[in-house]
Length: 384
Picture (tube, rainbow, N blue to C red):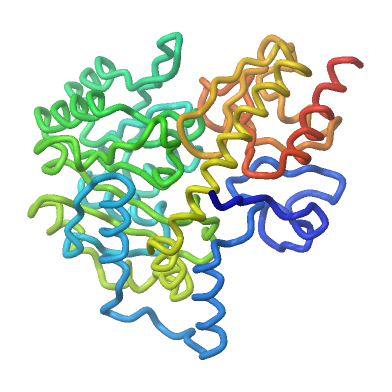
């Protein structure tokens, strides 16, 4: 298997992206969802060719992107996507807002399932809707959708749900039965499901991933998927995402979006995404998943050894760890003290909703050495 390893710290500090510029050089940044790995070779080659030939103009009206994603979805998920039902935009957040604006009216309520990716709260409001919170349910072994709570919300008038699958920050991959039940609920109440599946390529092989639109006929009628290569392949700055549908009515909604929504796709983002979704990048992605599997297990060992009061479950997907530090007594937002005294930047738990009090989100898409040092720095606070 191809080995994918993180770059050395001194090389990473030459980067100019948010992860490496937000804090001083004495801080280990494990907060924002950027990874520390080199690009997949096919992506580097595609971008290099574009620079060398000056291929930096507008995104074309006809591109291979939809076909590339359809082939990727078939290989990786067993999902048959019709390329004619795929449209691009700048990023997943933009796709979510544009779809929500068309499937909800101003003031209508959209269900979100905290703890959840903090911008979800802002995106719903940007679309002109209001937030209906139905938290994930802890079943003792993991997190799951509260289908009873979602039914209550739909019955009370919520007209859409913004689904996160795989879920950020818990790394939960919602199973087929839960997704099918959600689709039936939405269909029963005439609600829409907008599914953010940006972390889907990072589902561990032992768990797998079920695209929402693939679960049943109801999902096809009510659902919109927004996907991207940006998280798995670290391409967020290049700006390219896809809006996918599976029914004539939902396809008509996306096709009716202004052409400017599609023109906001970045040319480099599109070229990089085509390369990422190609078979040429499969071995790199498999190697990355193996590295992330090792890292999530290493993190569990480090926490057990150095911070036994921390509670952490191995995520099904991604490179984000949701860690409960409540028992350490560091308050509702322990990441503040950790940043100030340990010089480790983690994402603030309360930003994910009230359910995130006492929690932190840690990005383990890095080297074992950086992660080990980070946990050792945090553990030193306990000894003080």
